[in-house]
Amino acid sequence: MIIDCHGHYTTAPPALEAWRNRQIAAVGDPASAPDPVDLVLSDDDIRATIESNQLRLMDERGTDVTIFSPRASFMAHHIGDFAVSSAWARICNDLCHRVASLYPDRFVMGAMLPQSPGVDPATSVPELRRAVEDLGAVVVNLNPDPSGGHWDSPPLTDRSWYPIYEAMVDLDVPAMIHVSTSCNPAFHTTGAHYLNADTTAFMQLVQGDLFADFPDLRFVIPHGGGAVPYHWGRFRGLAMALGRPDPITLLDNVFFDTCVYHQAGIDLLARVLPHSSILFASEMIGAVRDIDPDSGHHFDDTRRYVDATPALTDDQRTQVYAANARRVYPRLDRLLTAQGR
Image 1 (cartoon, rainbow, N blue to C red):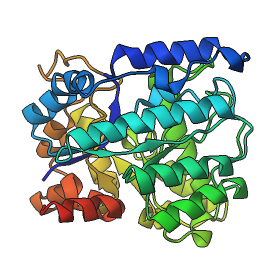
Image 2: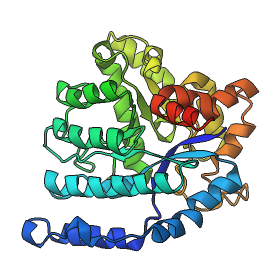
Image 3: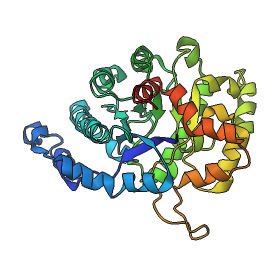
């Protein structure tokens, strides 16, 4: 089995973006905000966007199951206030639930949270619980920077985040640490802000003692961990200088995906980090959609790189493809087990 732990609904019907644009236009004037019931999407609308895009590529590449969450760049927590984010998160989560319900053997739901800059993270807990308990989400996307590139939130180790962590542990779901659109012109969204956030989140964890308080908390850092594998020696050296434990001690709680779009990058990831800390993923269809002229294959066809890397044995590859995800996402494992898989 091959489980892709990082998929987003980037191909949603145009009516979703049209509704969002109306919502954004009404920021500051709640009376003119669109009603969620105004957004009408049929099952056929959803099927048309999934079967010609993600499902087609999953079949071509041999992926069995994708964990599917709202489009990361569309979360845009910096827009409006908590009420705006709450309405938007509910709509997007409901839509991903519908995808998973239409294709229960192929897609499993992940959820976004209704975060908003300067708002107590505890306000996201009700939607977190609704997404997991009512909709079947097996993971939530946690944005460490709801400001959209200005980084005015406390680090992930701050106690203000604890209500979210308490709910995650209670529900036995991990979080993927995933920012959204950058509104800071210095940071390109997918080329800089995403990778900055992956690296920043890991350094925050090096500096803190979060897992002493939450030994069962689990984070997935996407995009191969940003700069983490490439600069593993730097993080080890900094930890020593700061009087912190070796970063390897974090890897009981922190995991990295394979959204790295070249062979040498996957080889490095698999050589530096234990295979037990690596989860297969592609983020298809996502930021990088073109065909690599050097290989003749799509950049985001990450299975090719994982299949080819000499840094994994066949048994380790099997764990990266599925067993690790089933361990990190217990609700996913229970779902697949109930399906006889």
